[in-house]
Amino acid sequence: MTQVYLDHAAATPVRPEVLEAMLPYFSQRFGNPSAVYDLGSDIKEVVEANRAKVGRLIGGHPAGVIFTSSGAEANNLAIKGAALAHLKKGRHLVVSAIEHHSVLNSARYLEKFHDFEVTFLPVNKFGQVETERLQKVLRPSTVLVSIGHGSNEIGTMQNLPELAALCRAAGVLFHSDAVATVGAIPIAVDDWQVDLLSLSGPALGAPKGIGALYFRPQLRLVPQIHSGIQENGRRGGTENVPGIVALGTAAELAQGELEAGSRHLKKLRDRLVAGIQEKIPYAIYTGHPELRLPGHASFCFEGIEGEALLFLLSPRGIYANTGSACASKALKVSPVLCAIGIKPDVAQGSLVLTLNRVNTEAEMDYVLAQLPPAVERLRSFSPVWRKKIAAAAGGQS
Image (cartoon, rainbow, N blue to C red; front, side, top):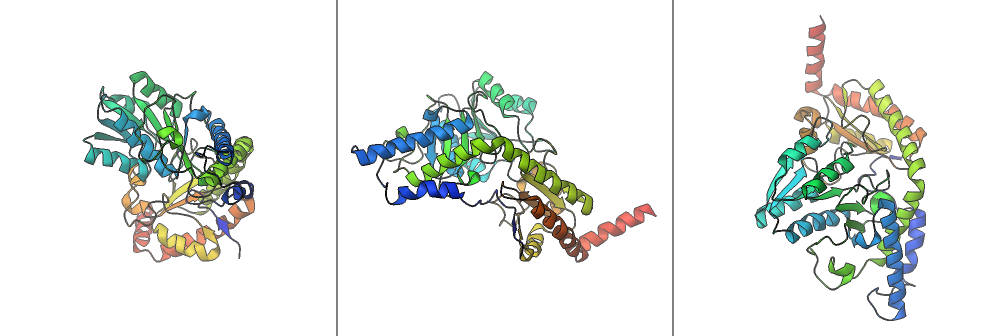
């Protein structure tokens, strides 16, 4: 059976080169980087070499890279760590309404347990944060603004340099969850004046369990995992050396493939989007039509439910999602789709297709052959759809 995996925002296979690079660090080179003897100091050099690879990928100084267990942990450390370290300035945070749960819930934690006030910033119909709107909500007591670079659910990318420059001029720290964009498009964290930036290993072809936070050197952070002196005292616990090697290797590979990889993904995405829009009526393309992730296509199909569509597609070997990876099992309507003005009944029919460099044109053609009849079949069972079609027919007579 043909198998087409289009849920790379949720999980991506480990790249063979990455697996090969990390294997020796499970058994042969197992030393603790904190040990003073050569078996440890040699491993410490390996950790620092891979820290530099991550820094190069995002255009930041290696000293600003903190290794974490995931992008979610990096977001927690950025938001809680920066906010709690700057209490003297104030207790006001700004986050966009379409952030990942690890960002939203970190802000809510500070709101509940540390008396912070959080402004959840609305976005426009494309899911973009408008600079003028952000400027209006900034206060003298604003400590941190957190706006994700790219949305895993609707694909929209933000104008990070413009937003970060506004915050820098106002004396406000700026954090971005860039899990969806690092390795997919060029990043220049220092040039863009971004103070903190989160990334994830699995998005680059590294295994689950490794991520990183970039922070501007000299920025104060309160650790969220307390232990010893690891990561210069900012993140306790013995370093995950195999994961760090994997992340560094994946970052190096991604940097060498950025231009060609982006072109490949855009070509596949545009083929998929054009085919869906041509073959399926009442298909709403969500997110910005142009300023979006190169390998991302997201739709809402009126008259159906996204989960039912996934159940029809999986026996045909097509694997996708109905929303962000962390919210797909929730029974409520996506807050991201609600934030961009999609009606709840229409939002129920969401489908998110996230591509990777391993996907092919033939796979896109297979999806375009299987998806339209699956949508049509579900609509044939839907009283909502029949009512819509009858109303449309009545309006034309």
